[in-house]
Length: 413
Image 1 (cartoon, rainbow, N blue to C red):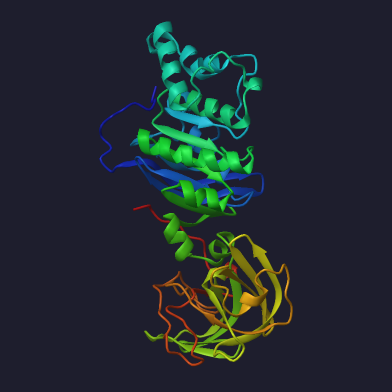
Image 2: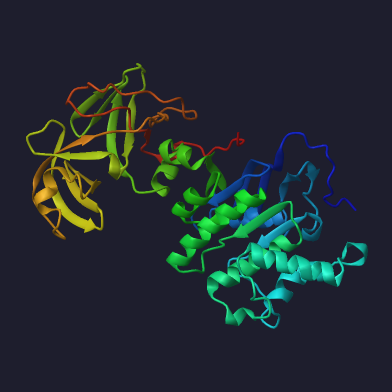
Protein backbone atom coordinates (compact mmCIF):
# COMPACT_ATOMS: atom_id res chain seq x y z
CA UNK A 1 0.00 0.00 0.00
CA UNK A 2 1.38 3.38 -0.98
CA UNK A 3 0.37 5.11 2.26
CA UNK A 4 1.95 8.37 3.31
CA UNK A 5 4.99 7.43 5.36
CA UNK A 6 7.97 9.56 6.36
CA UNK A 7 10.62 9.06 3.72
CA UNK A 8 13.14 11.77 4.51
CA UNK A 9 13.52 12.24 0.76
CA UNK A 10 11.63 15.53 0.47
CA UNK A 11 14.35 18.15 0.75
CA UNK A 12 12.29 20.91 -0.89
CA UNK A 13 10.69 21.96 2.38
CA UNK A 14 7.23 21.69 0.80
CA UNK A 15 4.38 19.92 2.59
CA UNK A 16 1.91 20.32 -0.29
CA UNK A 17 2.66 20.27 -4.02
CA UNK A 18 -0.42 20.53 -6.24
CA UNK A 19 -0.01 20.51 -10.03
CA UNK A 20 -2.72 21.08 -12.63
CA UNK A 21 -5.73 20.00 -10.54
CA UNK A 22 -9.02 19.94 -12.44
CA UNK A 23 -12.37 18.88 -11.01
CA UNK A 24 -15.73 19.13 -12.76
CA UNK A 25 -19.24 18.44 -11.56
CA UNK A 26 -21.11 17.98 -14.82
CA UNK A 27 -20.60 21.15 -16.84
CA UNK A 28 -19.41 23.12 -13.79
CA UNK A 29 -15.65 23.48 -13.36
CA UNK A 30 -15.05 23.52 -9.61
CA UNK A 31 -11.27 23.57 -10.14
CA UNK A 32 -9.62 24.63 -13.38
CA UNK A 33 -5.91 23.77 -13.71
CA UNK A 34 -4.96 24.76 -10.15
CA UNK A 35 -1.30 24.60 -9.09
CA UNK A 36 -0.16 25.38 -5.57
CA UNK A 37 2.83 24.83 -3.28
CA UNK A 38 2.74 25.14 0.53
CA UNK A 39 5.93 25.10 2.63
CA UNK A 40 6.14 23.06 5.81
CA UNK A 41 5.06 24.89 8.95
CA UNK A 42 2.93 27.50 7.17
CA UNK A 43 -0.71 28.30 7.98
CA UNK A 44 -2.42 29.02 4.68
CA UNK A 45 -5.89 30.45 4.01
CA UNK A 46 -7.96 29.53 0.94
CA UNK A 47 -10.01 32.70 0.51
CA UNK A 48 -12.80 33.34 -1.94
CA UNK A 49 -16.55 33.72 -2.46
CA UNK A 50 -19.01 30.83 -2.59
CA UNK A 51 -18.39 28.65 -5.61
CA UNK A 52 -14.75 29.66 -6.00
CA UNK A 53 -13.46 26.10 -5.50
CA UNK A 54 -11.78 26.52 -2.13
CA UNK A 55 -13.73 23.77 -0.32
CA UNK A 56 -13.37 21.41 -3.28
CA UNK A 57 -9.59 21.92 -3.15
CA UNK A 58 -9.55 21.27 0.61
CA UNK A 59 -11.59 18.07 0.24
CA UNK A 60 -9.25 16.82 -2.49
CA UNK A 61 -6.26 17.51 -0.25
CA UNK A 62 -7.99 15.48 2.49
CA UNK A 63 -8.84 12.57 0.21
CA UNK A 64 -12.58 13.14 0.64
CA UNK A 65 -12.78 13.75 -3.11
CA UNK A 66 -10.52 13.09 -6.07
CA UNK A 67 -9.49 15.25 -9.05
CA UNK A 68 -10.34 14.48 -12.65
CA UNK A 69 -6.74 15.31 -13.57
CA UNK A 70 -3.62 16.65 -11.91
CA UNK A 71 -1.35 15.44 -9.10
CA UNK A 72 -0.98 15.94 -5.34
CA UNK A 73 2.21 15.35 -3.38
CA UNK A 74 2.15 15.49 0.42
CA UNK A 75 5.53 15.63 2.13
CA UNK A 76 7.19 14.35 -1.03
CA UNK A 77 4.84 11.37 -1.55
CA UNK A 78 2.36 11.07 -4.43
CA UNK A 79 -0.98 11.15 -2.60
CA UNK A 80 -3.25 11.68 -5.60
CA UNK A 81 -5.06 8.35 -5.23
CA UNK A 82 -4.53 7.71 -1.50
CA UNK A 83 -7.54 7.36 0.81
CA UNK A 84 -8.02 9.80 3.70
CA UNK A 85 -6.73 7.40 6.36
CA UNK A 86 -3.51 6.95 4.37
CA UNK A 87 -2.67 10.63 4.06
CA UNK A 88 -1.89 11.52 7.66
CA UNK A 89 -4.18 14.55 7.71
CA UNK A 90 -6.51 15.92 10.36
CA UNK A 91 -9.80 17.50 9.22
CA UNK A 92 -11.99 19.97 11.11
CA UNK A 93 -15.50 20.52 9.75
CA UNK A 94 -17.42 23.79 9.91
CA UNK A 95 -20.24 22.34 12.01
CA UNK A 96 -17.93 20.32 14.28
CA UNK A 97 -19.32 16.86 13.26
CA UNK A 98 -19.01 15.65 16.86
CA UNK A 99 -20.68 12.44 17.96
CA UNK A 100 -23.54 13.59 20.18
CA UNK A 101 -23.78 10.28 22.06
CA UNK A 102 -20.09 10.38 23.03
CA UNK A 103 -18.40 12.40 25.74
CA UNK A 104 -15.82 15.03 24.92
CA UNK A 105 -13.04 12.60 25.86
CA UNK A 106 -14.46 9.84 23.65
CA UNK A 107 -14.83 12.22 20.71
CA UNK A 108 -11.18 13.25 21.01
CA UNK A 109 -10.05 9.63 21.35
CA UNK A 110 -12.13 8.34 18.43
CA UNK A 111 -9.38 8.47 15.80
CA UNK A 112 -7.02 6.55 18.08
CA UNK A 113 -9.54 3.91 19.16
CA UNK A 114 -10.50 2.92 15.61
CA UNK A 115 -6.91 2.12 14.67
CA UNK A 116 -6.22 -1.55 14.18
CA UNK A 117 -3.41 -3.83 15.21
CA UNK A 118 -0.07 -2.44 16.33
CA UNK A 119 -1.07 1.07 15.30
CA UNK A 120 -3.62 1.31 18.12
CA UNK A 121 -2.24 2.81 21.37
CA UNK A 122 -3.01 1.26 24.76
CA UNK A 123 -5.96 2.50 26.80
CA UNK A 124 -3.65 4.30 29.19
CA UNK A 125 -1.79 5.98 26.32
CA UNK A 126 -5.06 7.11 24.76
CA UNK A 127 -6.29 8.49 28.11
CA UNK A 128 -3.03 10.38 28.59
CA UNK A 129 -3.22 11.80 25.05
CA UNK A 130 -6.80 12.96 25.63
CA UNK A 131 -5.83 14.75 28.85
CA UNK A 132 -2.89 16.39 27.07
CA UNK A 133 -5.13 17.65 24.26
CA UNK A 134 -7.81 18.89 26.66
CA UNK A 135 -5.15 21.06 28.25
CA UNK A 136 -3.84 22.19 24.88
CA UNK A 137 -7.27 23.40 23.74
CA UNK A 138 -8.05 24.89 27.17
CA UNK A 139 -10.85 22.47 28.06
CA UNK A 140 -9.36 20.92 31.21
CA UNK A 141 -11.94 19.10 33.32
CA UNK A 142 -14.59 18.92 30.58
CA UNK A 143 -13.79 15.45 29.28
CA UNK A 144 -16.94 13.85 30.75
CA UNK A 145 -19.34 16.38 29.27
CA UNK A 146 -21.32 15.81 26.09
CA UNK A 147 -21.26 18.14 23.06
CA UNK A 148 -24.74 19.48 23.86
CA UNK A 149 -23.39 20.76 27.18
CA UNK A 150 -20.73 22.92 25.51
CA UNK A 151 -20.75 26.33 23.85
CA UNK A 152 -20.11 26.65 20.13
CA UNK A 153 -16.54 27.77 20.72
CA UNK A 154 -15.88 24.85 23.06
CA UNK A 155 -17.29 22.35 20.55
CA UNK A 156 -15.02 23.73 17.85
CA UNK A 157 -12.04 23.22 20.15
CA UNK A 158 -13.10 19.63 20.74
CA UNK A 159 -13.25 19.10 16.98
CA UNK A 160 -9.75 20.54 16.66
CA UNK A 161 -8.44 18.35 19.50
CA UNK A 162 -9.92 15.28 17.77
CA UNK A 163 -8.11 16.21 14.55
CA UNK A 164 -4.83 16.69 16.44
CA UNK A 165 -5.13 13.39 18.34
CA UNK A 166 -3.84 11.35 15.39
CA UNK A 167 -0.76 13.62 15.19
CA UNK A 168 -1.33 14.66 11.58
CA UNK A 169 1.34 16.03 9.29
CA UNK A 170 -1.25 18.36 7.78
CA UNK A 171 -4.22 20.05 9.46
CA UNK A 172 -7.17 20.99 7.23
CA UNK A 173 -10.01 23.21 8.45
CA UNK A 174 -13.23 23.96 6.53
CA UNK A 175 -14.69 27.32 7.61
CA UNK A 176 -13.66 26.55 11.21
CA UNK A 177 -15.24 29.69 12.68
CA UNK A 178 -18.19 30.13 10.32
CA UNK A 179 -20.83 28.83 12.75
CA UNK A 180 -19.74 31.05 15.65
CA UNK A 181 -20.74 34.55 16.69
CA UNK A 182 -18.45 37.50 16.04
CA UNK A 183 -16.71 37.77 19.41
CA UNK A 184 -16.13 34.02 19.72
CA UNK A 185 -14.71 33.98 16.18
CA UNK A 186 -12.27 36.73 17.07
CA UNK A 187 -11.12 34.96 20.24
CA UNK A 188 -10.69 31.60 18.47
CA UNK A 189 -8.78 33.19 15.59
CA UNK A 190 -6.17 34.51 18.01
CA UNK A 191 -6.08 31.20 19.83
CA UNK A 192 -5.58 29.22 16.61
CA UNK A 193 -2.77 31.55 15.55
CA UNK A 194 -1.02 31.03 18.89
CA UNK A 195 -1.60 27.26 18.76
CA UNK A 196 -0.11 27.05 15.28
CA UNK A 197 2.98 28.99 16.34
CA UNK A 198 3.38 26.69 19.34
CA UNK A 199 2.99 23.41 17.43
CA UNK A 200 4.51 24.34 14.07
CA UNK A 201 2.01 22.25 12.10
CA UNK A 202 1.32 22.88 8.44
CA UNK A 203 -2.29 24.00 8.16
CA UNK A 204 -4.75 24.97 5.42
CA UNK A 205 -8.09 26.53 6.23
CA UNK A 206 -11.01 27.65 4.08
CA UNK A 207 -12.72 30.98 4.68
CA UNK A 208 -14.74 33.64 2.88
CA UNK A 209 -13.93 36.17 5.63
CA UNK A 210 -11.20 38.54 4.46
CA UNK A 211 -10.40 39.78 7.96
CA UNK A 212 -10.03 36.21 9.20
CA UNK A 213 -7.61 35.32 6.42
CA UNK A 214 -5.51 38.45 6.88
CA UNK A 215 -5.31 38.06 10.66
CA UNK A 216 -4.58 34.33 10.96
CA UNK A 217 -2.74 33.14 7.84
CA UNK A 218 0.94 33.27 6.91
CA UNK A 219 -0.04 33.03 3.23
CA UNK A 220 -3.37 33.70 1.51
CA UNK A 221 -4.57 31.96 -1.65
CA UNK A 222 -7.32 34.03 -3.30
CA UNK A 223 -9.61 31.90 -5.47
CA UNK A 224 -12.33 32.78 -7.96
CA UNK A 225 -14.34 30.58 -10.34
CA UNK A 226 -12.14 27.54 -9.79
CA UNK A 227 -8.83 29.29 -10.35
CA UNK A 228 -6.18 30.98 -8.23
CA UNK A 229 -6.11 34.74 -8.67
CA UNK A 230 -3.20 35.49 -6.35
CA UNK A 231 -0.98 33.97 -3.67
CA UNK A 232 0.97 36.02 -1.16
CA UNK A 233 1.32 37.21 2.40
CA UNK A 234 -1.61 39.18 3.84
CA UNK A 235 0.35 42.41 3.33
CA UNK A 236 1.25 41.56 -0.27
CA UNK A 237 -2.25 40.73 -1.45
CA UNK A 238 -3.77 43.76 0.28
CA UNK A 239 -1.19 46.31 -0.84
CA UNK A 240 -0.44 44.81 -4.26
CA UNK A 241 -3.52 43.05 -5.65
CA UNK A 242 -2.74 41.18 -8.86
CA UNK A 243 -6.17 41.39 -10.52
CA UNK A 244 -9.30 43.55 -10.40
CA UNK A 245 -11.12 40.72 -8.61
CA UNK A 246 -8.60 40.67 -5.75
CA UNK A 247 -8.84 44.43 -5.39
CA UNK A 248 -12.63 44.35 -5.18
CA UNK A 249 -12.87 41.26 -2.99
CA UNK A 250 -10.22 42.16 -0.43
CA UNK A 251 -11.54 45.13 1.50
CA UNK A 252 -13.35 48.29 0.47
CA UNK A 253 -12.07 49.99 -2.67
CA UNK A 254 -13.10 52.83 -4.98
CA UNK A 255 -13.01 52.26 -8.73
CA UNK A 256 -12.60 55.27 -11.02
CA UNK A 257 -12.68 55.29 -14.83
CA UNK A 258 -9.33 56.28 -16.29
CA UNK A 259 -8.02 57.05 -19.76
CA UNK A 260 -4.34 56.22 -20.21
CA UNK A 261 -2.50 57.73 -23.16
CA UNK A 262 1.22 57.15 -23.66
CA UNK A 263 1.89 56.81 -19.94
CA UNK A 264 -0.32 59.74 -18.85
CA UNK A 265 -3.52 58.99 -16.93
CA UNK A 266 -6.61 61.20 -16.83
CA UNK A 267 -9.03 60.72 -13.92
CA UNK A 268 -12.12 62.95 -13.82
CA UNK A 269 -10.27 65.66 -15.77
CA UNK A 270 -7.13 65.50 -13.61
CA UNK A 271 -3.98 64.42 -15.46
CA UNK A 272 -1.20 62.44 -13.81
CA UNK A 273 2.14 61.66 -15.40
CA UNK A 274 4.09 58.43 -15.10
CA UNK A 275 7.42 59.22 -13.50
CA UNK A 276 9.13 56.13 -14.93
CA UNK A 277 7.80 56.52 -18.46
CA UNK A 278 5.77 53.94 -20.35
CA UNK A 279 3.75 53.90 -23.54
CA UNK A 280 0.52 52.14 -22.49
CA UNK A 281 -2.73 53.50 -23.89
CA UNK A 282 -6.35 52.51 -23.37
CA UNK A 283 -9.40 52.72 -21.14
CA UNK A 284 -9.11 51.21 -17.68
CA UNK A 285 -10.02 51.49 -14.03
CA UNK A 286 -8.07 53.09 -11.21
CA UNK A 287 -8.47 51.58 -7.77
CA UNK A 288 -7.95 53.50 -4.52
CA UNK A 289 -8.70 52.46 -0.93
CA UNK A 290 -11.04 54.67 1.15
CA UNK A 291 -8.35 55.27 3.79
CA UNK A 292 -5.99 56.58 1.07
CA UNK A 293 -8.27 59.54 0.24
CA UNK A 294 -7.69 62.89 1.91
CA UNK A 295 -10.56 65.37 2.21
CA UNK A 296 -9.73 69.08 2.00
CA UNK A 297 -11.60 72.36 1.80
CA UNK A 298 -13.29 73.29 -1.48
CA UNK A 299 -10.58 75.80 -2.44
CA UNK A 300 -7.81 73.17 -2.29
CA UNK A 301 -6.21 71.65 -5.35
CA UNK A 302 -7.36 68.21 -6.38
CA UNK A 303 -10.57 66.50 -7.37
CA UNK A 304 -13.55 68.63 -6.32
CA UNK A 305 -16.93 67.32 -5.25
CA UNK A 306 -19.59 67.35 -2.54
CA UNK A 307 -20.42 65.31 0.53
CA UNK A 308 -23.47 63.13 -0.09
CA UNK A 309 -23.49 61.23 3.18
CA UNK A 310 -21.45 61.26 6.38
CA UNK A 311 -21.53 58.50 9.01
CA UNK A 312 -19.68 58.25 12.30
CA UNK A 313 -18.74 54.67 13.19
CA UNK A 314 -16.94 54.81 16.51
CA UNK A 315 -13.46 56.24 15.84
CA UNK A 316 -14.02 56.31 12.05
CA UNK A 317 -15.79 58.95 9.97
CA UNK A 318 -17.02 57.49 6.68
CA UNK A 319 -17.76 60.04 3.95
CA UNK A 320 -19.61 59.33 0.71
CA UNK A 321 -18.34 61.82 -1.88
CA UNK A 322 -19.78 62.79 -5.26
CA UNK A 323 -16.81 63.52 -7.54
CA UNK A 324 -17.81 64.20 -11.12
CA UNK A 325 -19.92 61.26 -12.22
CA UNK A 326 -18.36 58.92 -9.65
CA UNK A 327 -19.22 58.19 -6.03
CA UNK A 328 -16.23 57.67 -3.75
CA UNK A 329 -16.00 56.51 -0.17
CA UNK A 330 -13.39 58.02 2.15
CA UNK A 331 -12.50 56.90 5.66
CA UNK A 332 -11.19 59.48 8.10
CA UNK A 333 -10.46 59.38 11.81
CA UNK A 334 -12.37 61.31 14.46
CA UNK A 335 -9.08 62.90 15.50
CA UNK A 336 -8.24 64.10 11.98
CA UNK A 337 -11.52 64.66 10.13
CA UNK A 338 -10.14 67.58 8.12
CA UNK A 339 -12.76 70.10 6.95
CA UNK A 340 -15.55 67.73 8.01
CA UNK A 341 -14.72 68.29 11.68
CA UNK A 342 -17.73 70.57 12.38
CA UNK A 343 -20.12 67.83 11.22
CA UNK A 344 -18.13 64.79 12.33
CA UNK A 345 -20.50 64.14 15.21
CA UNK A 346 -23.57 64.10 13.01
CA UNK A 347 -24.96 60.93 11.53
CA UNK A 348 -25.48 62.60 8.16
CA UNK A 349 -24.29 65.65 6.26
CA UNK A 350 -25.22 66.59 2.74
CA UNK A 351 -24.04 69.11 0.17
CA UNK A 352 -20.85 70.24 1.86
CA UNK A 353 -18.27 71.50 -0.70
CA UNK A 354 -14.87 69.83 -0.47
CA UNK A 355 -11.63 69.14 -2.26
CA UNK A 356 -10.13 65.67 -2.37
CA UNK A 357 -6.51 64.58 -2.63
CA UNK A 358 -5.53 61.00 -3.31
CA UNK A 359 -2.57 59.19 -1.79
CA UNK A 360 -1.99 55.97 -3.68
CA UNK A 361 -0.05 52.94 -2.61
CA UNK A 362 2.87 51.48 -4.51
CA UNK A 363 1.32 49.02 -6.92
CA UNK A 364 1.60 47.21 -10.19
CA UNK A 365 0.23 48.44 -13.52
CA UNK A 366 -1.59 45.59 -15.29
CA UNK A 367 -2.28 45.88 -18.99
CA UNK A 368 -4.96 48.35 -19.97
CA UNK A 369 -7.89 47.36 -22.14
CA UNK A 370 -6.79 46.32 -25.61
CA UNK A 371 -3.34 45.09 -24.60
CA UNK A 372 -2.61 41.42 -23.96
CA UNK A 373 -0.34 39.72 -21.46
CA UNK A 374 0.01 39.38 -17.70
CA UNK A 375 0.62 42.20 -15.19
CA UNK A 376 3.99 43.94 -15.41
CA UNK A 377 6.02 45.58 -12.64
CA UNK A 378 4.58 48.74 -11.12
CA UNK A 379 5.17 52.22 -12.42
CA UNK A 380 5.28 55.16 -10.08
CA UNK A 381 3.23 58.24 -10.82
CA UNK A 382 4.91 61.60 -10.41
CA UNK A 383 4.10 63.13 -7.02
CA UNK A 384 4.25 66.60 -8.59
CA UNK A 385 1.83 65.86 -11.42
CA UNK A 386 -0.66 68.38 -12.79
CA UNK A 387 -3.42 69.16 -10.31
CA UNK A 388 -1.10 69.20 -7.30
CA UNK A 389 -2.64 66.01 -6.00
CA UNK A 390 -0.80 64.40 -3.11
CA UNK A 391 0.14 61.14 -4.76
CA UNK A 392 3.14 59.30 -3.36
CA UNK A 393 2.83 56.41 -5.79
CA UNK A 394 0.28 55.24 -8.29
CA UNK A 395 -2.97 53.59 -7.37
CA UNK A 396 -2.82 50.28 -9.26
CA UNK A 397 -4.53 50.29 -12.64
CA UNK A 398 -6.57 47.44 -14.05
CA UNK A 399 -8.46 46.84 -17.29
CA UNK A 400 -12.04 48.01 -17.55
CA UNK A 401 -12.82 44.51 -18.82
CA UNK A 402 -11.66 42.34 -15.93
CA UNK A 403 -12.02 39.19 -18.02
CA UNK A 404 -9.07 40.34 -20.15
CA UNK A 405 -6.71 39.71 -17.23
CA UNK A 406 -6.18 35.93 -16.98
CA UNK A 407 -6.17 34.51 -13.44
CA UNK A 408 -2.73 33.28 -12.47
CA UNK A 409 -0.99 31.15 -9.88
CA UNK A 410 2.52 30.89 -8.56
CA UNK A 411 4.53 29.01 -6.01
CA UNK A 412 4.75 30.44 -2.53
CA UNK A 413 8.25 31.63 -1.59
